[in-house]
Image 1 (cartoon, rainbow, N blue to C red):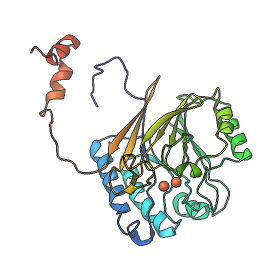
Image 2: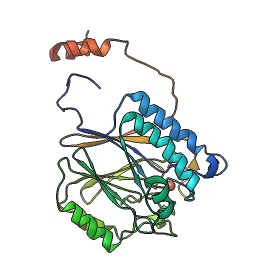
Image 3: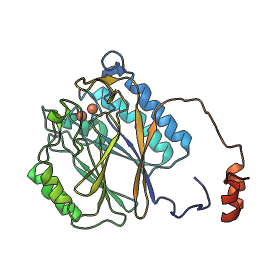
Image 4: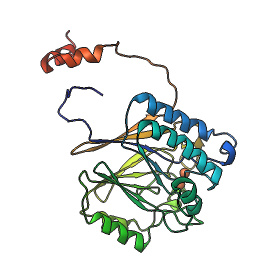
Length: 299
Ligand SMILES: [Fe+2]
Ligand SMILES: [Fe+2]
């Protein structure tokens, strides 16, 4: 990040790292016998730490454990907590359809096990993040109960200083993939009614295993691809193919008037180009006009 504002936007007030669908298995077993779920999460954490960013929160939008196993939750928690501690950031866990509420509570949240929805509201330095549990025990589609919607409406009745991000597993978006719409969030109109006129500035989702964006009830929706495997949208149109590639996390930059979601591929890639040491320092020392000239094509 530059120490000098070089454009028209002041720096982001908040940065959130958004990951989804870790799908860990007991003992670190590879998912489908092939996908090294733990390795990608560790790699993602290394990238976050290398970046020097200090996210205000790490948000994980569900399907944390593939089968709700205690050991799987503990290993995800160990990996994420170690980085969160070093970065001085908090973790917000969101339930997905593969998660089990009781184990999720005991292993991730350190709470008593319970089958009640795992909803929560977090004040992150004036930015409100609401975790909403769209899971339905025993099923893979998503629902929100009347009680949950009433609770959400009550929370949203008071605006937050920097507005609200809503984090849920089943994104309220259509999907072009076959079969995935069986597993969608049902009765989305009820959620739209609650969000109308609220201070919700963004919806963070998962579940689809590919990064995508859309609008819902006037609110931008951003889905983080999975860290385990991703769905191949270039597969033949009637196929449903998950691939061991394309994993990514999202960085969410919250500005005064905009929320910007950026996809960060997870992996070790060779540098193709880099500015030399000290280049940014030199640019910061110039006047805005000299900076513009230094980046012009005629120098
Ligand atoms: Fe998933
Ligand atoms: Fe899911």
